[in-house]
Image (cartoon, rainbow, N blue to C red; front, side):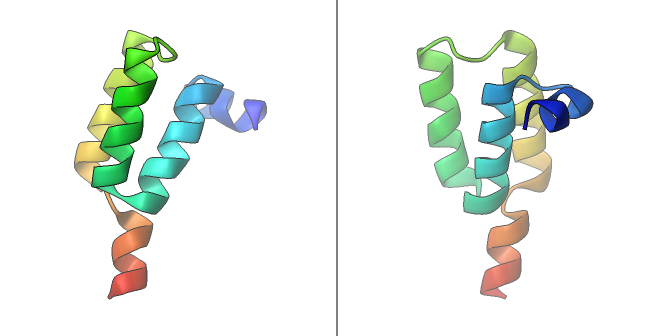
Amino acid sequence: MKFISNSVGLSENAFVLWIAVSIFGIVYGAGILFRFVEKNELSRKDASLITVFLCLCHAIIEDSLLF
C-alpha cells in the first residue's frame, strides 16, 4: 500500500482515509478526518488534499451502490 500512497502523493494514513472517504461517503469520512487531525496523524498538506477530495468526490462508491 505504501507504493500506491506514494504515487498518489499522500502518506499511508492519508491514503487509508482517502479509501474510507471514497467508500463510506462524506459523513463518515469527515468524522474519520477529524479524528486523524485531533490525533495529529495527518500533515497539513494531507488534510488539505483529503478535504478537497472529500468536497469534490464524496460518495463515489456509496451513491453508485444506492442508485
